[in-house]
Length: 301
Picture 1 (cartoon, one colour):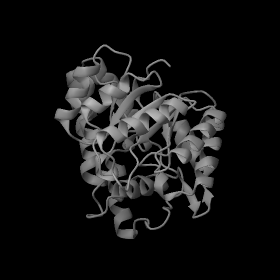
Picture 2 (cartoon, helix red, strand yellow):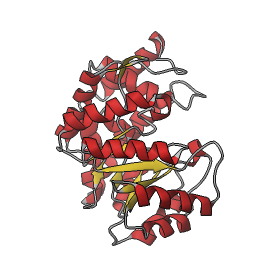
Picture 3 (cartoon, rainbow, N blue to C red):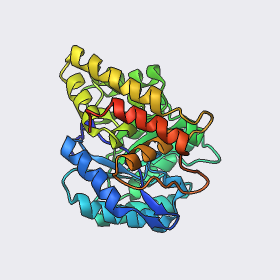
């Protein structure tokens, strides 16, 4: 498939309650992203709380969103699972719904060694009906995809790119070095670092903040890709304000950034702010802080 370059937001999964998706709200989020010029939309990633959703809701969400997006942009679907059979089942469903590719972090719980990871991804790519993107997420799956492992897997014809959420700049620069000028896509996860790596040749960012302000992130990518340092710096300050002011409102919670994004979208009237157990939405005091951040960034969509 043609390399996707730009911002691919990892979309939240809006829910009305534990058993019901907020499909209307999800459609509004997708429309805002597409209107802003995103390069694609990534469903069921970390920001999409895939690990908290029963398979039934994951299947329903993929079907509903692929139908709503209707080919306007490519759709990537997260298939991270501890069972290869479950990953392939979700991948087959994604294909049937019209998705363009799948994204898979390493199997979690018992972390595999690098050879085992190569074997697992090879088995996934061999049987997967869609192109596969690797997802390096060591903080959540307890294992790092070594650069040599990514290079080895990149030789598989059905493995087409990597998203790195490690936050390790030396690692990411090594990926850029190995894949410069190739068709293998390299994306940054942490939005705080995306502008810098796009200036150096990265293919884009998978940035959660684009759920809230898609135009801000699309414009940042375009400025950085064009080498416009002044505009990139100006937009980076806004992105850093968003990150610094919003994502750490609940210290000690890894889910704080997801809670903040859902709360902000609720306050903007876009979708429900519900989170599936074991997580809970922000309280009234935290909501006031989120509202203050939104007021500061009110010029952005």
